[in-house]
Amino acid sequence: MFHSASVIKRHPLNPVLTEKQVPYDADLIFNAGVQKIDGTYYMLFRNDYCAPRGSHNLAGTNIGLARSDDGVHWTVDPEPHFALKDDEIRRIYDPRLQVIDGEIYICFAVDTWHGIRGGIAKTDKDFRTLDILSMSAPDNRNMVLFPEKINGMYARLERPFPVYSRGYDIFDVWFSDSADLKYWGNTQLVLPSKMVPFANAKVGPAAPPIKTKEGWLTTFHAVRAVPPKKDGWEEKWGKEYYAGIMLLDLKDPTKVVGLYNEPLLAPEADYETKDGFRNNVIFPGGMILEDNGEVKIYYGAADTVECLATANVDDLIALCLQNK
Ligand code: BMA
Image (cartoon, rainbow, N blue to C red; front, side, top):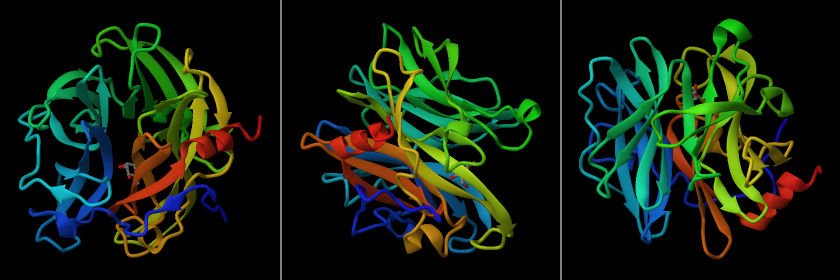
């Protein structure tokens, strides 16, 4: 029913990272955060592994690091990164990367024994340390940091999920800011799910925003609930995940200045719609603006592999502004 925008192209070598490239137990490689730092591309990816490898028996989640010179061909480090020794934390996943004033930050979802939280941590150039700066109250996740301070404050988008007051999965994109990345407040609604014509359920931040002359350009994920059925590995799966795109005001990023009212990416390629853990899922986590105006968008496909799509930045801005 929905199609991807014509201005975006899937990379011919998709998927660009799969479990086959990972030298340790790995089965589902997806929902990665990506940044280009001093000319090298870094990808922190989620690895849901099975026991034994290759079975459909999920056994755990860890975070891996891949490096690349061109953003397309990736080499994975020999071991996963960030072993956690906190009994309250069950796992971290869906990492997003940001660089602010030369420091590298990771936002991630945290399953704890008492709810799902959004974590923000600082790491080093080798991605060895995970110095946790803040953890949200439950239930919240899908946090992404803006690449610079706005009005003197660090800024993030986030997606709390208030089940008790909203009923079934209707969740929205919110904004908060902070003087120190630790204490967050000034929380405001940015993108209500009902503003997105192709979502009938939740929306949430996807890749961290990039700065353009017209505003903060940022993707979001948008969910359509459909009748649950056996499709991928899972017994039943009843959701479709699309990527959307919007522009936020440079000085006041709580204001949506442009929104493309169709999907930027809809599940269409075989690696998005077939043979995955959860088919028909597109989940962007990384967006890089190259000097020549090309935007690389990295996304998890079917919760199984990591993919790349590209578009020109002016075309993406024009999509967001075409309904104004
Ligand atoms: C969300 C998160 C994502 C995942 C998506 C589709 O709730 O768990 O990590 O990609 O569902 O399964």
